[in-house]
Image (cartoon, rainbow, N blue to C red; front, side, top):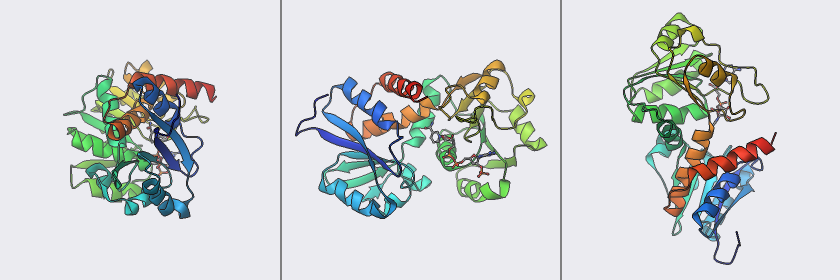
Length: 286
Ligand code: NAP
């Protein structure tokens, strides 16, 4: 890749941001597409966020990804945001449209496409989601829009999550349960899609997993863990041994990046190339 005076600039901003894997798979996609772009990572301190976004306009930066802790705070500096970003109250992608900065949230598309590209159609299915933090918001909104038949959220602290569920209840009825209750076990028995959106099992705590009753889980259902380190969590290993179809978090990570790429360039990136670059970086990182 040769950088010239014409090269268009994309970047991820966050604080910290040096650990981000986005430059790895976005630059792989840029190279595969043969387009004159470069993708960098720029740390932005909290108090510098407004200046950074003004700088995006000043320097004609084409697009940004936005990561922790700026996803919510960045909204007030943008000219418009799309519906997913508005519902989630968080932006992870900014497009510079001739000086007009538009915010998007591509986590929703990333999560949904990950499932569909791996052969699972969520419409009309009974879904059970474990955990209800930041990532779960995009998952809930994705499942609502895909019209799942039912959605049960299992957590360790029901009162903490109630406001979030109340918010999404305007779109569909959602059942919020203690994941160690009998009612939750009943929901688990009917689940056709089971998702882990907790960090339980993420490297280095690889011996952890959510405390669910695996004997209640039906054989052959689709089990999605949004963790991507390790590639197979204890949760996914247990699901696989239980006869379930499994998918790890690479699909969501690459999927959200692919959607950002499409918004910036108008081109569909090669997701196989992105996934290969991500896997290589993850393997080298250990
Ligand atoms: P988060 O906002 O901290 O939420 C974590 C959720 O898990 C909360 O509901 C939390 O419950 C629960 N939880 C955490 N520790 C727990 C424990 N020890 N026992 C029981 N429940 C626990 O985190 P997040 O941003 O949503 O991320 C969750 C996971 O998804 C992380 O592993 C992250 O790496 C991964 N992720 C993947 C992608 C992707 O693209 N693949 C994107 C985003 C996140 P409490 O509120 O009770 O603590």
